[in-house]
Length: 149
Image (cartoon, rainbow, N blue to C red; front, side):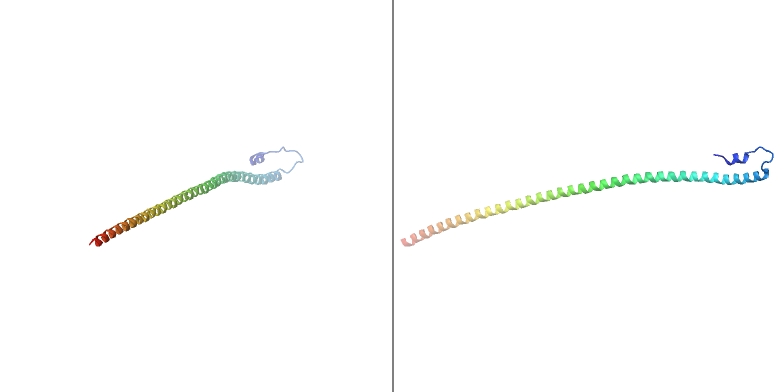
């Protein structure tokens, strides 16, 4: 690619019946001025493109980071849900087992109280029978003593 200096420094051979040197120089000065402006703009645009490409690279990196963060967050959330379900199942199982034990202990207590009640009932019956027998024997002894008098 030509540089503005190369255009500015270009010299043409002088020949007979050639172009007017002043017109050529004036035209070349305009070309040089326009070319310098375009050359600068081109450099500035290349710099801007470089900056934009760097930003795009940074945004791409951020996007990848965000995507991986999102994947990690989703995985973590799923693990939390799974762990919470497992923990709730364990808690429910333990509560059901504890409830079974409490009911079993209560049933055993009821059976024991019922057994004690039946034993006491038998003891009361035995006591009544013995007391009745005692009273009858005492009454008979009293009657015997009274009839002897």
